[in-house]
View 1 (tube, rainbow, N blue to C red):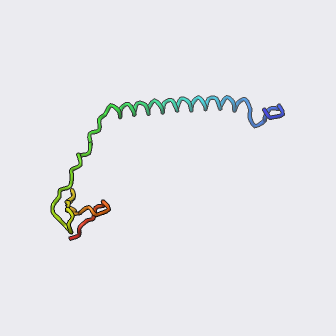
View 2: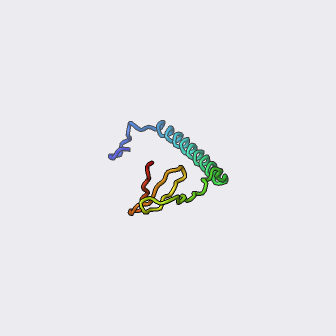
View 3: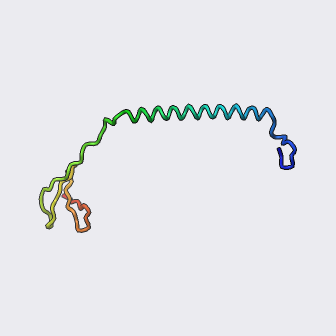
Length: 92
């Protein structure tokens, strides 16, 4: 209905029925999607992760450089900790 009380010609009874059926279809599709999501979430919760990360190993102290302790990282890089607390790598 329009503001003045007359019927709106753009909106008729057949459209109203179609809207209801489309809305019903959308609701059922949403319900199915939620159910599938819930099943997937439950399956994920049941499974334990098999690819756990290995525990981190501390770097080895291997010597001295300019009065600082030199560490060797897991991939072979050598560095020391500077006065700011950052790693400073030693080039060969």
